[in-house]
Amino acid sequence: MVIAALVLRLVVMVVLLPEQFQPDHLPKPEHWHFGFETGRIAYSIAEGHGFSSPLYTNTGPTAWMTPAYPYIVAGAFKIFGVYSQASAVALLSFNALCSALVCIVVFFIARFSFGDNVANWAGWGWALCPYGIYFPVERIWETWLATLILCTLFLITLYLEKEERVSRWAGFGALWGLGALTSPAMLSVLPFLALWVIYKRHRRGRRWFLVNAVAAIAFVAVVTPWFVRNYEVFHRFIPFRDGMGMVLRLGTQGKTDYWGPYELGPWHNPAEWSEFQQVGELAYMDHKKQQAIEFIKQRPGWYAWATMRRIVFIWTGYWSLDRDYLKEEPLDPPNIVFCTTLTILMLIGLWRALKANWLRTLPYALVLFSFPLIYYITSPEVYYRRPIDPFFVILAAVALVPGAGRPPLKKRQLELKEEGDPEVAYSTT
Image 1 (cartoon, rainbow, N blue to C red):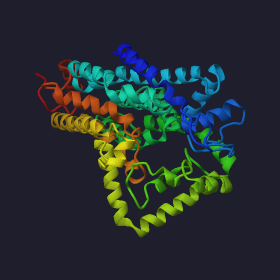
Image 2: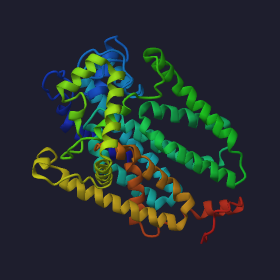
Image 3: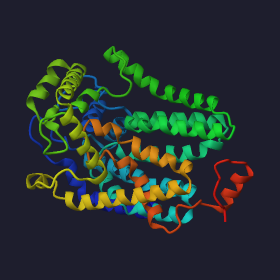
Protein backbone atom coordinates (compact mmCIF):
# COMPACT_ATOMS: atom_id res chain seq x y z
CA MET A 1 0.00 0.00 0.00
CA VAL A 2 2.70 2.47 1.03
CA ILE A 3 4.83 1.82 -2.05
CA ALA A 4 1.87 2.19 -4.42
CA ALA A 5 0.72 5.33 -2.62
CA LEU A 6 4.17 6.89 -2.69
CA VAL A 7 4.73 6.15 -6.38
CA LEU A 8 1.38 7.71 -7.29
CA ARG A 9 2.13 10.83 -5.30
CA LEU A 10 5.63 11.25 -6.70
CA VAL A 11 4.35 10.92 -10.27
CA VAL A 12 1.81 13.67 -9.65
CA MET A 13 4.53 15.72 -7.94
CA VAL A 14 6.57 15.79 -11.15
CA VAL A 15 3.57 17.19 -13.01
CA LEU A 16 2.77 19.84 -10.39
CA LEU A 17 6.34 20.87 -9.51
CA PRO A 18 6.32 24.04 -11.69
CA GLU A 19 3.48 25.46 -9.56
CA GLN A 20 5.94 26.11 -6.74
CA PHE A 21 7.79 28.64 -8.90
CA GLN A 22 4.92 30.59 -10.38
CA PRO A 23 5.77 34.32 -10.53
CA ASP A 24 3.46 36.76 -8.83
CA HIS A 25 2.87 40.48 -8.80
CA LEU A 26 4.66 42.95 -6.58
CA PRO A 27 5.05 43.43 -3.66
CA LYS A 28 5.21 39.66 -3.40
CA PRO A 29 8.60 38.00 -3.76
CA GLU A 30 9.30 35.82 -6.74
CA HIS A 31 8.87 32.59 -4.77
CA TRP A 32 5.72 33.38 -2.80
CA HIS A 33 4.02 30.19 -4.02
CA PHE A 34 6.92 28.20 -2.58
CA GLY A 35 5.48 27.56 0.87
CA PHE A 36 3.74 30.94 1.20
CA GLU A 37 4.14 32.14 4.84
CA THR A 38 5.98 28.95 5.74
CA GLY A 39 8.46 29.54 2.95
CA ARG A 40 9.07 33.14 3.96
CA ILE A 41 9.68 32.22 7.61
CA ALA A 42 11.98 29.38 6.53
CA TYR A 43 13.84 31.79 4.27
CA SER A 44 14.35 34.13 7.22
CA ILE A 45 15.65 31.26 9.36
CA ALA A 46 17.99 30.02 6.63
CA GLU A 47 19.35 33.53 6.12
CA GLY A 48 20.14 33.87 9.82
CA HIS A 49 17.33 36.28 10.77
CA GLY A 50 15.45 33.88 13.03
CA PHE A 51 11.78 32.97 13.12
CA SER A 52 10.43 36.11 11.47
CA SER A 53 8.94 37.86 8.44
CA PRO A 54 6.02 35.68 7.26
CA LEU A 55 5.08 37.92 4.35
CA TYR A 56 6.82 39.88 1.63
CA THR A 57 9.55 41.86 3.37
CA ASN A 58 11.35 41.91 6.70
CA THR A 59 8.72 42.66 9.35
CA GLY A 60 10.48 41.28 12.41
CA PRO A 61 9.77 38.31 14.72
CA THR A 62 6.55 36.43 14.17
CA ALA A 63 4.16 34.03 15.84
CA TRP A 64 2.10 33.70 12.65
CA MET A 65 2.83 29.97 12.58
CA THR A 66 4.02 27.31 14.98
CA PRO A 67 7.66 26.29 14.54
CA ALA A 68 7.79 22.61 13.57
CA TYR A 69 7.18 22.71 9.83
CA PRO A 70 8.92 26.05 9.06
CA TYR A 71 12.08 24.64 10.61
CA ILE A 72 11.75 21.53 8.41
CA VAL A 73 11.52 23.79 5.37
CA ALA A 74 14.46 25.85 6.64
CA GLY A 75 16.47 22.63 7.00
CA ALA A 76 15.74 21.78 3.37
CA PHE A 77 16.84 25.28 2.37
CA LYS A 78 20.12 24.81 4.24
CA ILE A 79 20.80 21.44 2.61
CA PHE A 80 19.41 21.84 -0.90
CA GLY A 81 19.42 25.61 -1.39
CA VAL A 82 17.03 28.46 -0.71
CA TYR A 83 13.96 28.32 -2.95
CA SER A 84 15.73 25.81 -5.18
CA GLN A 85 14.15 23.10 -7.27
CA ALA A 86 16.02 20.50 -5.22
CA SER A 87 14.43 21.91 -2.04
CA ALA A 88 10.99 21.79 -3.64
CA VAL A 89 11.47 18.16 -4.67
CA ALA A 90 12.74 17.23 -1.20
CA LEU A 91 9.87 18.94 0.63
CA LEU A 92 7.13 17.69 -1.66
CA SER A 93 8.61 14.19 -1.46
CA PHE A 94 8.49 14.49 2.32
CA ASN A 95 4.83 15.48 2.10
CA ALA A 96 4.17 12.55 -0.25
CA LEU A 97 5.93 10.16 2.14
CA CYS A 98 3.88 11.43 5.10
CA SER A 99 0.68 10.89 3.12
CA ALA A 100 1.79 7.43 2.00
CA LEU A 101 2.70 6.39 5.55
CA VAL A 102 -0.83 7.25 6.62
CA CYS A 103 -1.79 4.00 4.85
CA ILE A 104 -0.11 2.05 7.65
CA VAL A 105 -1.89 3.96 10.39
CA VAL A 106 -5.23 3.76 8.60
CA PHE A 107 -4.79 0.00 8.22
CA PHE A 108 -4.13 -0.56 11.92
CA ILE A 109 -6.88 1.82 13.06
CA ALA A 110 -9.40 0.03 10.86
CA ARG A 111 -8.17 -3.42 11.87
CA PHE A 112 -8.42 -2.55 15.56
CA SER A 113 -11.99 -1.35 15.21
CA PHE A 114 -13.46 -3.28 12.31
CA GLY A 115 -11.25 -6.21 11.33
CA ASP A 116 -8.86 -7.24 8.56
CA ASN A 117 -11.27 -6.90 5.66
CA VAL A 118 -12.13 -3.28 6.39
CA ALA A 119 -8.45 -2.60 7.13
CA ASN A 120 -7.45 -3.74 3.64
CA TRP A 121 -10.19 -1.70 2.00
CA ALA A 122 -9.37 1.39 4.05
CA GLY A 123 -5.61 1.13 3.50
CA TRP A 124 -5.97 0.81 -0.24
CA GLY A 125 -8.70 3.42 -0.19
CA TRP A 126 -6.29 5.92 1.29
CA ALA A 127 -3.50 4.90 -1.09
CA LEU A 128 -5.80 5.70 -4.03
CA CYS A 129 -7.73 8.61 -2.50
CA PRO A 130 -7.53 11.66 -4.81
CA TYR A 131 -7.23 14.03 -1.84
CA GLY A 132 -4.30 12.07 -0.44
CA ILE A 133 -2.60 11.99 -3.86
CA TYR A 134 -3.06 15.53 -5.13
CA PHE A 135 -2.88 17.87 -2.17
CA PRO A 136 0.40 16.64 -0.58
CA VAL A 137 2.37 17.50 -3.72
CA GLU A 138 0.46 20.63 -4.68
CA ARG A 139 1.55 22.84 -1.79
CA ILE A 140 4.47 22.96 0.63
CA TRP A 141 2.49 23.06 3.85
CA GLU A 142 2.32 21.24 7.19
CA THR A 143 -1.00 19.52 6.46
CA TRP A 144 0.42 16.09 5.71
CA LEU A 145 2.80 15.87 8.62
CA ALA A 146 -0.16 16.95 10.79
CA THR A 147 -2.36 14.27 9.20
CA LEU A 148 0.18 11.56 9.95
CA ILE A 149 0.60 12.74 13.55
CA LEU A 150 -3.15 13.05 14.17
CA CYS A 151 -3.86 9.56 12.81
CA THR A 152 -1.00 8.13 14.89
CA LEU A 153 -2.34 9.82 18.02
CA PHE A 154 -5.79 8.40 17.30
CA LEU A 155 -4.37 4.88 16.93
CA ILE A 156 -2.45 5.21 20.19
CA THR A 157 -5.60 6.48 21.92
CA LEU A 158 -7.44 3.29 20.97
CA TYR A 159 -4.84 1.24 22.87
CA LEU A 160 -4.56 3.48 25.93
CA GLU A 161 -7.55 2.01 27.74
CA LYS A 162 -5.32 -0.93 28.77
CA GLU A 163 -1.90 0.76 28.88
CA GLU A 164 -0.32 1.02 32.34
CA ARG A 165 3.29 1.93 31.50
CA VAL A 166 3.82 5.54 32.51
CA SER A 167 6.62 5.98 29.98
CA ARG A 168 4.21 5.34 27.11
CA TRP A 169 1.77 7.89 28.46
CA ALA A 170 4.63 10.38 28.61
CA GLY A 171 5.47 9.62 24.99
CA PHE A 172 1.80 10.07 24.10
CA GLY A 173 1.76 13.52 25.70
CA ALA A 174 5.03 14.48 24.01
CA LEU A 175 3.62 13.47 20.61
CA TRP A 176 0.58 15.65 21.26
CA GLY A 177 3.01 18.49 21.95
CA LEU A 178 4.77 17.89 18.63
CA GLY A 179 1.39 17.80 16.91
CA ALA A 180 0.38 21.11 18.49
CA LEU A 181 3.65 22.72 17.35
CA THR A 182 2.96 21.40 13.86
CA SER A 183 -0.72 22.31 13.54
CA PRO A 184 -2.56 23.65 16.63
CA ALA A 185 -5.91 22.87 14.96
CA MET A 186 -5.58 19.22 15.96
CA LEU A 187 -5.85 20.24 19.63
CA SER A 188 -9.58 20.68 19.04
CA VAL A 189 -10.00 16.90 19.32
CA LEU A 190 -7.72 16.41 22.35
CA PRO A 191 -10.24 17.15 25.15
CA PHE A 192 -12.84 14.83 23.63
CA LEU A 193 -10.45 11.92 23.11
CA ALA A 194 -9.00 12.44 26.59
CA LEU A 195 -12.46 12.28 28.17
CA TRP A 196 -13.23 9.12 26.20
CA VAL A 197 -10.05 7.42 27.48
CA ILE A 198 -10.72 8.56 31.05
CA TYR A 199 -14.25 7.20 30.92
CA LYS A 200 -13.12 3.88 29.46
CA ARG A 201 -10.38 3.40 32.06
CA HIS A 202 -12.63 4.45 34.92
CA ARG A 203 -15.27 2.03 33.70
CA ARG A 204 -12.78 -0.83 33.73
CA GLY A 205 -11.44 0.10 37.14
CA ARG A 206 -8.01 1.20 35.88
CA ARG A 207 -6.14 4.19 37.19
CA TRP A 208 -6.72 7.21 35.03
CA PHE A 209 -5.64 10.35 36.87
CA LEU A 210 -1.92 9.63 37.22
CA VAL A 211 -1.33 8.46 33.69
CA ASN A 212 -3.22 11.39 32.20
CA ALA A 213 -1.32 13.77 34.47
CA VAL A 214 1.96 12.32 33.17
CA ALA A 215 0.78 12.81 29.58
CA ALA A 216 -0.25 16.40 30.35
CA ILE A 217 3.13 17.17 31.94
CA ALA A 218 4.95 15.77 28.90
CA PHE A 219 2.73 17.85 26.61
CA VAL A 220 3.45 21.02 28.58
CA ALA A 221 7.17 20.27 28.61
CA VAL A 222 7.24 20.07 24.81
CA VAL A 223 5.25 23.24 24.08
CA THR A 224 6.59 25.46 26.90
CA PRO A 225 9.80 26.53 25.12
CA TRP A 226 7.69 27.97 22.31
CA PHE A 227 5.49 29.79 24.81
CA VAL A 228 8.55 31.19 26.56
CA ARG A 229 10.05 32.33 23.28
CA ASN A 230 6.84 34.16 22.37
CA TYR A 231 6.65 35.85 25.76
CA GLU A 232 10.26 36.98 25.60
CA VAL A 233 9.83 38.33 22.09
CA PHE A 234 6.34 39.87 22.30
CA HIS A 235 6.00 40.42 26.08
CA ARG A 236 2.64 38.71 25.94
CA PHE A 237 1.38 35.19 26.50
CA ILE A 238 0.87 33.69 23.03
CA PRO A 239 0.19 29.95 23.39
CA PHE A 240 0.72 28.81 19.80
CA ARG A 241 -0.15 31.37 17.12
CA ASP A 242 -1.19 35.01 17.18
CA GLY A 243 -3.47 34.95 14.15
CA MET A 244 -6.88 34.19 15.63
CA GLY A 245 -8.02 37.79 15.23
CA MET A 246 -7.12 37.78 11.55
CA VAL A 247 -8.77 34.44 10.71
CA LEU A 248 -11.88 35.49 12.62
CA ARG A 249 -11.91 38.65 10.52
CA LEU A 250 -11.79 36.51 7.37
CA GLY A 251 -15.15 35.06 8.41
CA THR A 252 -16.78 38.50 8.37
CA GLN A 253 -17.43 40.36 5.16
CA GLY A 254 -20.33 41.80 3.24
CA LYS A 255 -20.15 39.40 0.30
CA THR A 256 -19.63 35.68 0.00
CA ASP A 257 -18.91 35.17 -3.68
CA TYR A 258 -15.77 33.21 -2.75
CA TRP A 259 -14.93 31.03 0.26
CA GLY A 260 -11.56 32.68 0.83
CA PRO A 261 -12.00 36.44 1.46
CA TYR A 262 -8.25 37.06 1.35
CA GLU A 263 -8.75 40.70 0.44
CA LEU A 264 -9.52 41.24 4.14
CA GLY A 265 -5.96 40.30 5.04
CA PRO A 266 -2.51 41.59 4.09
CA TRP A 267 -2.00 39.22 1.12
CA HIS A 268 -3.95 40.96 -1.65
CA ASN A 269 -4.89 44.31 -0.14
CA PRO A 270 -2.31 47.13 -0.23
CA ALA A 271 -4.06 49.00 2.59
CA GLU A 272 -4.02 45.93 4.85
CA TRP A 273 -0.40 45.20 3.98
CA SER A 274 0.54 48.79 4.74
CA GLU A 275 -1.21 48.60 8.12
CA PHE A 276 0.61 45.36 8.94
CA GLN A 277 3.96 47.01 8.24
CA GLN A 278 3.16 50.19 10.12
CA VAL A 279 1.69 48.85 13.37
CA GLY A 280 3.40 45.48 13.56
CA GLU A 281 2.08 41.94 13.67
CA LEU A 282 0.51 41.85 17.14
CA ALA A 283 -1.21 45.23 16.87
CA TYR A 284 -2.50 44.26 13.43
CA MET A 285 -3.94 41.00 14.76
CA ASP A 286 -5.57 42.82 17.68
CA HIS A 287 -7.18 45.31 15.29
CA LYS A 288 -8.54 42.50 13.08
CA LYS A 289 -10.04 40.81 16.14
CA GLN A 290 -11.74 44.04 17.16
CA GLN A 291 -13.11 44.54 13.64
CA ALA A 292 -14.41 40.98 13.54
CA ILE A 293 -16.20 41.24 16.89
CA GLU A 294 -17.80 44.55 15.92
CA PHE A 295 -19.00 43.10 12.62
CA ILE A 296 -20.52 40.04 14.29
CA LYS A 297 -22.34 42.20 16.82
CA GLN A 298 -23.74 44.42 14.08
CA ARG A 299 -24.75 41.62 11.70
CA PRO A 300 -25.34 38.42 13.70
CA GLY A 301 -27.88 37.10 11.19
CA TRP A 302 -25.45 37.41 8.29
CA TYR A 303 -22.71 35.78 10.33
CA ALA A 304 -24.96 32.82 11.21
CA TRP A 305 -25.88 32.39 7.55
CA ALA A 306 -22.22 32.56 6.47
CA THR A 307 -21.35 30.01 9.15
CA MET A 308 -23.91 27.60 7.69
CA ARG A 309 -22.38 28.08 4.25
CA ARG A 310 -18.93 27.26 5.65
CA ILE A 311 -20.29 24.09 7.26
CA VAL A 312 -21.82 22.98 3.95
CA PHE A 313 -18.57 23.77 2.13
CA ILE A 314 -16.40 21.71 4.47
CA TRP A 315 -18.67 18.67 4.30
CA THR A 316 -19.63 18.77 0.61
CA GLY A 317 -17.13 21.00 -1.18
CA TYR A 318 -20.00 23.17 -2.45
CA TRP A 319 -19.69 26.93 -2.30
CA SER A 320 -21.15 28.25 -5.52
CA LEU A 321 -21.90 27.28 -9.10
CA ASP A 322 -21.80 30.84 -10.31
CA ARG A 323 -20.04 31.22 -13.66
CA ASP A 324 -17.48 33.74 -12.36
CA TYR A 325 -16.74 31.54 -9.34
CA LEU A 326 -16.21 28.46 -11.52
CA LYS A 327 -13.68 30.36 -13.61
CA GLU A 328 -11.50 30.45 -10.49
CA GLU A 329 -12.42 26.94 -9.34
CA PRO A 330 -13.10 24.91 -12.51
CA LEU A 331 -12.68 21.57 -10.71
CA ASP A 332 -15.37 22.29 -8.16
CA PRO A 333 -18.23 20.35 -9.87
CA PRO A 334 -16.42 16.96 -9.85
CA ASN A 335 -15.01 17.74 -6.42
CA ILE A 336 -18.50 18.42 -5.05
CA VAL A 337 -19.66 15.02 -6.33
CA PHE A 338 -16.66 13.20 -4.85
CA CYS A 339 -16.63 15.09 -1.54
CA THR A 340 -20.37 14.70 -0.99
CA THR A 341 -20.28 11.00 -1.88
CA LEU A 342 -17.39 10.41 0.52
CA THR A 343 -19.23 12.27 3.27
CA ILE A 344 -22.42 10.25 2.72
CA LEU A 345 -20.49 6.97 2.79
CA MET A 346 -18.72 8.11 5.94
CA LEU A 347 -22.03 8.87 7.65
CA ILE A 348 -23.46 5.50 6.63
CA GLY A 349 -20.36 3.74 7.95
CA LEU A 350 -20.44 5.74 11.16
CA TRP A 351 -24.10 4.84 11.70
CA ARG A 352 -23.44 1.14 11.13
CA ALA A 353 -20.50 1.17 13.50
CA LEU A 354 -22.36 3.10 16.18
CA LYS A 355 -25.22 0.61 16.05
CA ALA A 356 -22.78 -2.27 16.51
CA ASN A 357 -20.90 -0.68 19.41
CA TRP A 358 -21.44 3.00 20.09
CA LEU A 359 -18.77 3.37 22.76
CA ARG A 360 -15.95 1.93 20.69
CA THR A 361 -17.03 3.98 17.66
CA LEU A 362 -17.47 7.21 19.60
CA PRO A 363 -13.84 8.43 19.06
CA TYR A 364 -14.46 8.55 15.31
CA ALA A 365 -17.49 10.77 15.77
CA LEU A 366 -15.60 12.96 18.25
CA VAL A 367 -12.78 13.59 15.79
CA LEU A 368 -15.00 14.13 12.77
CA PHE A 369 -17.32 16.61 14.43
CA SER A 370 -14.86 18.49 16.66
CA PHE A 371 -11.94 19.05 14.29
CA PRO A 372 -13.73 21.41 11.83
CA LEU A 373 -15.45 23.53 14.50
CA ILE A 374 -12.93 26.38 14.39
CA TYR A 375 -13.33 26.67 10.62
CA TYR A 376 -17.08 27.08 10.84
CA ILE A 377 -16.68 30.41 12.61
CA THR A 378 -13.59 31.71 10.80
CA SER A 379 -12.85 30.89 7.18
CA PRO A 380 -12.77 27.59 5.28
CA GLU A 381 -10.03 26.36 2.97
CA VAL A 382 -9.82 23.29 0.79
CA TYR A 383 -6.85 22.16 2.89
CA TYR A 384 -8.53 22.48 6.27
CA ARG A 385 -10.46 19.18 6.24
CA ARG A 386 -7.59 17.11 4.92
CA PRO A 387 -6.22 15.88 8.30
CA ILE A 388 -9.48 14.03 8.99
CA ASP A 389 -9.91 12.62 5.47
CA PRO A 390 -8.38 9.26 6.54
CA PHE A 391 -11.27 8.81 9.00
CA PHE A 392 -13.72 9.45 6.17
CA VAL A 393 -12.00 6.71 4.17
CA ILE A 394 -12.09 4.22 7.06
CA LEU A 395 -15.79 4.74 7.70
CA ALA A 396 -16.56 4.70 3.98
CA ALA A 397 -14.97 1.26 3.93
CA VAL A 398 -17.25 0.27 6.80
CA ALA A 399 -20.20 1.37 4.67
CA LEU A 400 -19.02 -0.60 1.63
CA VAL A 401 -17.81 -3.85 3.21
CA PRO A 402 -20.62 -6.30 4.12
CA GLY A 403 -20.85 -6.94 7.85
CA ALA A 404 -18.16 -4.37 8.64
CA GLY A 405 -20.00 -2.88 11.60
CA ARG A 406 -19.68 -6.07 13.61
CA PRO A 407 -16.85 -6.69 16.10
CA PRO A 408 -13.45 -7.00 14.40
CA LEU A 409 -11.97 -10.19 15.79
CA LYS A 410 -13.59 -13.08 17.62
CA LYS A 411 -10.37 -13.65 19.53
CA ARG A 412 -10.28 -10.06 20.75
CA GLN A 413 -13.90 -10.17 21.84
CA LEU A 414 -13.27 -13.35 23.82
CA GLU A 415 -10.26 -11.72 25.48
CA LEU A 416 -12.38 -8.72 26.45
CA LYS A 417 -15.07 -11.02 27.87
CA GLU A 418 -12.46 -12.85 29.91
CA GLU A 419 -11.26 -9.52 31.28
CA GLY A 420 -14.82 -8.67 32.28
CA ASP A 421 -15.16 -5.71 29.96
CA PRO A 422 -18.73 -4.52 30.62
CA GLU A 423 -19.14 -3.00 27.16
CA VAL A 424 -19.04 -6.34 25.33
CA ALA A 425 -22.77 -6.75 24.99
CA TYR A 426 -22.98 -8.43 21.62
CA SER A 427 -22.39 -12.00 20.45
CA THR A 428 -18.88 -13.08 19.56
CA THR A 429 -20.03 -15.79 17.20
